[in-house]
Image (cartoon, rainbow, N blue to C red):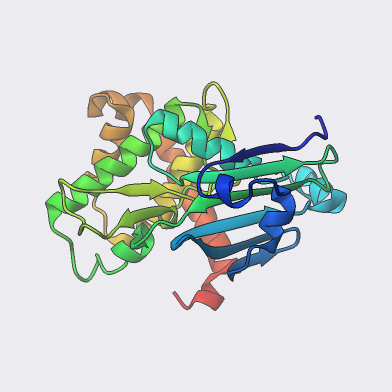
Length: 275
């Protein structure tokens, strides 16, 4: 890869950083840090009265790259994944993050410097929080059905367009709260795209991994068997009888993966979250 920097700027950053080194300018931005990991920092900032989220990658180092590869995981080397995935989802008609600035420089993948800036989505609530009370306080069926169909349609378009998410949990769907959600007025945006993969088509293995994560993360929200069949019918856009016959392997995979993911969740997160 060329070491020449790649930079894309929309307004207001194009005007704000005119004549400046954008890599120095982004490092000078200030705001509340929402996540900080080795080599990656995410914070919220305001420019011209509007909120933005800034993610800066400083390189993960060869040790982290090799650790991921030895674990059969693809390492995230910079902000380009999120930038490219956001552009691709927009082309596919899937609401997601609106990225307004991106920069990347450096040919060494272990030390690559990159950033992406996205518009803040507000007011919002993620679907995990929105649906948490459903078992005790069931929603109006028409609203629940509309949400199921919207999620299924978004995921179908994403997979048909060659994008798989790799962290497709319901907490990564953000529901717009203004105007108030209704069956005829739903605005959902898919976020956390930094691990997404983009191809000409989505391999079945990665399709099934996304669907398994989505299935697992919705187990505790009180969905019925009919609700899950409604999701499948919308996602595959085929008669239900045909889906059940042709996708028997997938249905078995969802059950098996739910057990595995639940064990992993209990081992890593349940003691800390208290849920």
